[in-house]
Image (cartoon, rainbow, N blue to C red; front, side):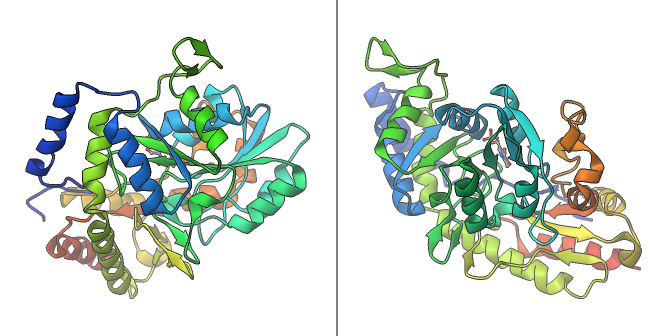
Length: 372
Ligand SMILES: Cc1ncc(COP(=O)(O)O)c(C=O)c1O
């Protein structure tokens, strides 16, 4: 048993002394929020790092999602996935939009474009897929559906920091993409988030919306909200960017070790890397097939916990099974067989850049010792 608690993730924290000069600058400027120097610098730095044209920083990813829907004036019904963090659907609810759940693909756990097409009604206005665990959705298929039916396409890209397909950021697809920089994410600003958009006009609109709708000192163009990222968050983001490549490489190595070592265990299935894709390695999900493995997912979860290893059952329960949403017709289990099946079997193992080899081995050894 591990003497230390091994959590599913730990935040990337650069050396504290390197943060002090940023704090000194904030104190000197006396400018704490509202598009300050670090906010501006982080926007530029992220555009370059991520390979995107425009980015609007937010105080968190949920407010960015809510604002993205406002920016595109989405109403009516939006087709989305039940296999995500609950904020994806909550953002629709907060906009008075009816979520319509469609099932996911068995091999990527992402929203299935065919199921989306079948769920379109005259009230559908948009599709909101999630790049779950950072695995890119079927980008072209979704764009084709959006074009054919004249729908908006908003990606919840909370897990997809730095993810590329054929050398192109996934954030450049769809009308808008939303990132989360929450402490648990690959790149974090304690709390934080962003919307990626493709033109200057939309950037300005979103920037207005996240600042109460103000354009200039005395004009309010829309009922905006307060969702601005502050200078402490932005400064921390700038410092963190210096360490991000190293951190991503470490995550990749851990994922490779898990894959190699778990390959021989009957009843444990890992998600494969997708072709021509630069992954984020945000999470390391496995599927536990009880009959082959000899233990259910929940039994394995409990056994890891007894050994001080805190894996997480992301994303269980499915969003469609929470009381707020389970009354919707589309939330019926018969409509979502794949998502319900995956949610019963999935377990996310610890992965973060400072996770030691010793701890990775401890996790692997418990899995090996648990098989029948
Ligand atoms: C898929 C997904 N969407 C949205 C969010 C919400 O982001 P935040 O926590 O930054 O509000 C998260 C995670 O936290 C998430 O995992």
